[in-house]
Image 1 (cartoon, rainbow, N blue to C red):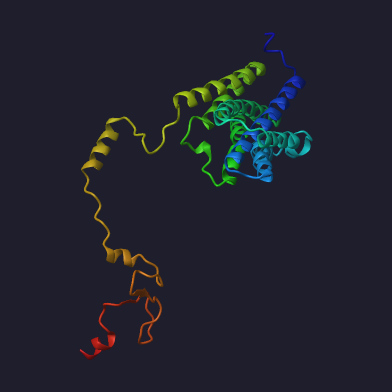
Image 2 (spheres, rainbow, N blue to C red):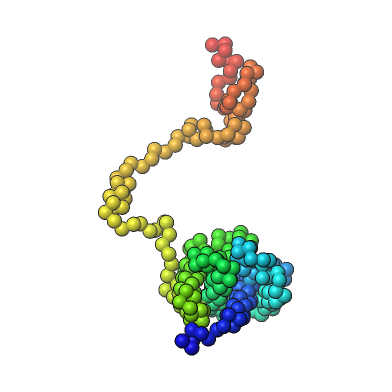
Length: 287
């Protein structure tokens, strides 16, 4: 009971702010590490660090519509994000050191922001489904914005170890603990859970199944796969059919052009083709 009542309402708000700022700094540092790997200049470090550190929280606050985003009203958020990007710019770690730091900070950020997102959602008066969604968005939104800015496939879409699913699990733990009246236990459990899941995912390659190599294990699925295996291969498309799929006006090789507008006699057509080896139209008329 002492642990359950350790934090008052004001104390919980203070811890939430501290975790939020810690997540901003850590995520901005991670964004700076990505900028270093891409050989950006100082401005690039600051932009990537800003988006990575503040993107998820700002997206959450905009969706909650509970006043302006905290990053724009609290004077600490922007300097903390800038500080994280500058640390990544001026401090050079070894590749192995960056890998270890990245894994630890990434896991910690997921736990921190899952807690913050859930708590801010409850403060806005919404229920637990929205809290889990907002906790997940807070945890992964900055990374998604960073990846889209750099024209990369966001990490939350798969192809790597567990990421967004860890945020969902941590948010659900925080929601459950809050429903039981023990947010302190929820904070600790959510952060520890995210650390353990991310470490296990990186260490042993845990991940969700994807559509390429996953197949349902059932009698019906086996019959369907067996039927597809005995099905005949599709007939290859002939070159003539491929030419029909071309748009008028495109070249189809040496000596051939689709006019696609006017015949030689002045009439319109949808796709006339002139080939170098085709007989002359004048000779065809003489015959």
